[in-house]
Each structure stands twice: as C-alpha cells, then as structure tokens.
Length: 446
Image 1 (spheres, helix red, strand yellow):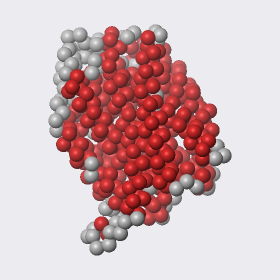
Image 2 (image 1 turned 90 degrees about the horizontal axis):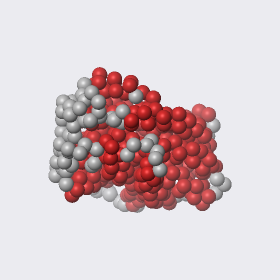
Image 3 (image 1 turned 90 degrees about the vertical axis):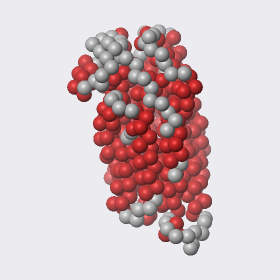
Image 4 (image 1 turned 30 degrees about the vertical axis):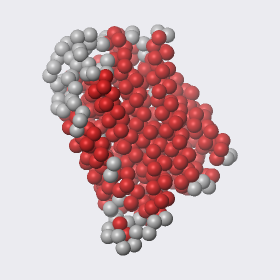
C-alpha cells in the first residue's frame, strides 16, 4: 500500500509556504524543548556537587521530575488538541516551560529544583501531540513521513545543541566575575546556564503567533467517514483494541529505543569525562557534534530508507525501519562504551547515533497512517506518554541504577551503558519484528 492510498483527494491542503513556515517554527520549538530538558546532561558534576547527591538521585531530577506530569498531562492535552486550537495549546506551553527553565536557575534547594523541573515537563507536554496532529493536516500523506522526519530532527539538533551550548555557556559563565550585580552574583554558573537557555523560548512564542490553525482533514477510516466531531475517548480505546497488536508492536519498539536514546542523552557526556578524562567542554562539544550531524543525518536516512522499502513493496516500511535499526545496533551500541580509548569509542558512537535516529520520524508517520484524523493527537499523546515513561522516566534512571546499585562504582558507568544496550535492543527487534504482519493488516483496513 502506498502512502497516497490514504490521501483525501477532496481536501485542499494549505499552501506550501504556510506549511513549511509552520514546520520550521514547530521544529524550532522542538529543538528548544530538547535544549531545555537535556541541559542537565552537561551539568551532572556541578549539580551533584551543589546538592551533594548520587547518580541515582541526580537521575530523579533529570528524568523523573520532568516526566511525572509530562507524561500524565500528555493524554488530556492530546484530548484537548483533538477538539480545540492546537496553535494556542502549543504557544501557551512554550511560554510556560521557558519560564520554568529560567526558574530552574533561581532555585536554591533540591525540592525547589525538583518542582521547577516538573514545571518544564508540564509546559513541554503541550508540544508533540498538537504538533504531530497539525502536521497531518498541513502535509499530504505522501509528504508526511518527510515532514515528521524534519520535525523529529528537533531531538538530535536540540540534544546536540544542548551539549554544545550548555558546555560552552557553563564554561564561559564559570570564568566571569559577576560581583556587584544584584541577583546574578548570588547564582552559580550552572544556575545561570539554565536562565541562559530558557530565555530564547519567548522568541519562539512570538513566532508561533503567526501560525494559523489548519482545517482538520475529514477522516476516511471506516465507521468515521467525514466525521467532523471530536472522537470520544472510548472510541479511541476501541480503535486501539481493534489493532492492539499493530499498536503494541509500534509502541513497544519505540519505547525500548527511547530507553537507550534518553539514557545516552543523559549519561554519555559524563561517561566520556569519567572513563577517558575528557574535559566537560570537550565532551559536550563531541557529543553535540555527533547528535547534530549523525543524529540529523540518521533521521533523514530513515525517511529515505523507508521510501526505498515502500517502493520495493513493503507496505510496513515505516515500522520495519525500527526493527532493522534495533537489529543493527546490538553489537556497536554494546561495544562503544567498552572501547579502550576515547577515539575508538567516539567513532562507534557516531555510527550508533546515526542508526538509532533512523527510526523515530518514520515511526511517528507509521502511527499517523493507521490512525483516524480525530484520534491522531490522542494516540500521539499516548505513544509519547509511553516513550517518555520508559525513556525520560526510566532510561536515565535505569543506567544510574546499574551504576549505583549493581556495579556500585561511579567509574562503572560504561558497563551500565553497555548492559542496558545489550538488553533493550534485542527486545525491540524481537517485538517489532513479530508485529509487522499486524501493522500491515491495520494499514489494509484504511
């Protein structure tokens, strides 16, 4: 089945200029969201020292605090996005998380920091469900995988920039003398770093004001033809149950990949520092370059590979890419943190990041293509709920758990990374591979 089979020929999509402007602004917001959530990855040492905490306790600040309401609110926000203006939901969210990011830098206590990290998660929960739903109404199905791949670039660009900007800004602020400047003189360099990365969000808010809410495309799913009213939650649940094996494979695969993705984001800079003695600035720049170049290239390569597979007759191409990527990553992902020197580890990490990020953009396209329009934001929110529960909530913490409670040695972080990869990638490959036939069946019912 081709993507064009699902196109609604009677629907007039917005002009290309408007579509690409919206895609660009949403991408910018997504980049910023990953900078703001991931900035802690380059500040492990300073934050641990400031609060006198362990890796596991740090992981609660990095992952769990952010995730608590991020995942819980994703579902009701998806419900709202299927009924009300996605533009205003996203705009208010960007404003709120930018305020909370700045406030992270003004807190003095562990509890205060935990609370503001929760606030960042609350704001960021508004973005993805509404954005993926909007993209489905701005781009025809044959262009959707490319649009979602471009949007998914925000993960790698934002993560990479968080490393580069964060390490540079922290280094620069550490060398400045702010004596005599009210408020600022009382803040540590790591606190000022949070304020510095939070402020650009208010510019994105202004850009979002020029976005127009698109007309929703009438669904062509059987039982919902040209249904313009929002779909009740019970119907979404019924649809998911009907195709539970297809959605289950997709959800599980993306969740397993998220554990590695977010775990790597959270700990790889610190791993390079602990295992190879790299400076924080060098480690941040190295990982920043890897995510910006290899991660972004991988995102586009995934879309191109899925297109090639589609032309070869694989109707499940968008999901199949996830299975292939998970299989291909088992050996290099386990080996990378175990290399005897930084150069060989970094070389393998380039390959790992490239292959890993082939999957996410096309996986989100796969979700849209088996989901009726008026259910897209809610199902996207559900997938993001699951991936962030496993990725943000558990990815960083699982690795810290191995370090603190299994190996009981900060220097064993490399073994925690390798162990997690050895468990998770094979599970992802197995479950997604078994689910491909069910996904093809769900597509055939469109």
